[in-house]
Image (cartoon, rainbow, N blue to C red; front, side):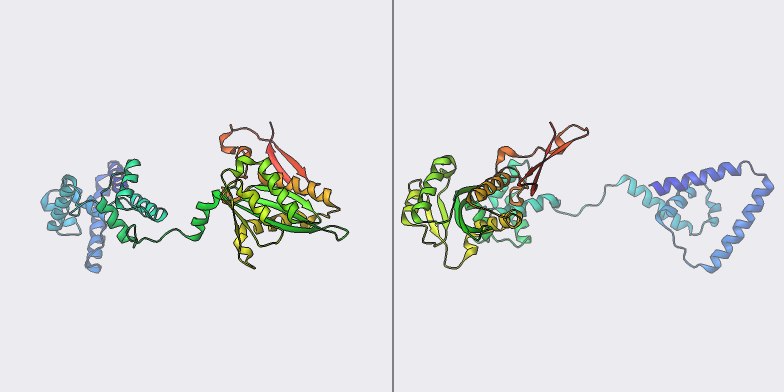
Length: 358
C-alpha cells in the first residue's frame, strides 16, 4: 500500500510540474517518450510488471479514453482484467480454508508443556487446566495436539526423570557427611555437617580431632534441639556407611520421625549434594586459608556457613540464598536514582558481600 501511494504522489507531482511547461515542450517530450516506448517494445516481448505497476496502469486506464489505450505496454483486455481483480479484492472476503480454524501456536505449545510436565494428566485434566487459564479447547483438540507431538496418553506417557523425582522428594530429605581439614602443624580435624536438599541450607554440627560414635550421636541430638522446626518436615537422612554413624545416631533421628538411609559402598555420587558442598567450601574458602587449630577452623566455618546460607546465590534456587528472609531486593523495583553500594569483607577479604546503601 505504501508503494502505491508513493507512485501516485510521484505522478501527481510530475503533472503539477508539467503545468508550468510550454505546449511545444510537452509535445516534444511526448514524441520522445513514444519513440523510447517503441524501442522498448521491439526489444522486450513480455515486460515484467509488479503489483504496484498493475495498480497504477489499471487506475490510469479509467482516466484515459478507450482509443488512447494504445500507449500502454499491455493489451486493453489485460487492463480490464486487472481492474476487475482490484474491484473483486476490495469487495470480497479473504479466502479461508474449509473446516475449523487452526489452533494458536502458543496454545499448542502450552498443551504440550502441560503434558510433559504432568505425565499423569489425561486429556480432560489438561482441558480443565486450560479452562482455568481462560483458554477454551476441546478434548479432541488436546488429543490431536499431543498425537502430533508424539506424546502418548496418560497411562502410557513417560514418567518424570530422575532429576525431577529427586527434586520432588528433596523437601523431605536431609543429608550428612564428614570431611577433613589439615592444620598448619599437620593435625587432622574432622568436620560433621548436615545439608537440606531442597533449600541447600547448611548446618555445621561440630569439629573434633577424635570423632567417635558417642560424639556424633551427641551432635545429632544438638541439631534436633537447635533446629526442631526444620527437622519436623524431614523424613529421611542420607548418610554413608562410616562406622561413626552408630545405631544410637540413627535412633536419635528416628525419635524425630526421620529414617536413616545408607548409601551404597564406594558410591559418593549417592550423596552428591553433600559432596558438592564440600567441594564448594574447599574451592572458595579452605584452599586459601592456613588453619592453625580447632577454634580457628570453627570460626572460619561459621563465617562461611553464614555467608553461604544468607548471601551466596544458588543456581538451583533461582540465584537466591537458602535463607528466604535474606533475599536481595531487585534493582528494577527501586526508584530511578543514583545507587551506592557497600562492600563487606569476611575472612580477611577472602569473601566479599555487596549491599545497597541505606
